[in-house]
Length: 109
Picture 1 (cartoon, rainbow, N blue to C red):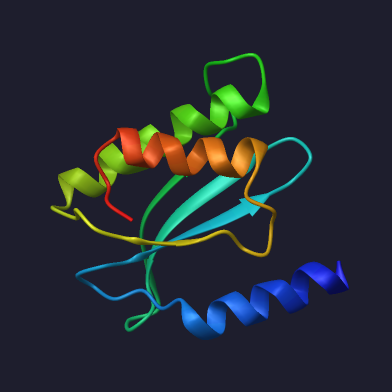
Picture 2 (picture 1 turned 180 degrees about the vertical axis):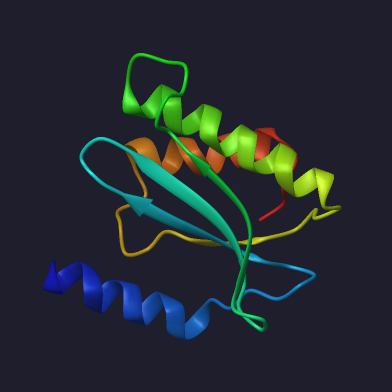
């Protein structure tokens, strides 16, 4: 936990979300992945998607669907470009699937 907190702090020092280009924040537990679109200038969450109750057998499949869901919510708010904050997690598995789902949904990062 302490290692992830250090990585997360290092990433957040560089990655900032704005109204034009919000930040996709990722939280991963053993059972779910939660994605949020955050405008750091206002400190507001613009959209949220989660893998809970999603379609798919594995967490990776549900993460891909959650990424696409978040992208569709962003498109409804006319958001095209974002920055990706992996939250200190390694970019494999469910985290990578969520990013790919968002890209497939039309978000650019």
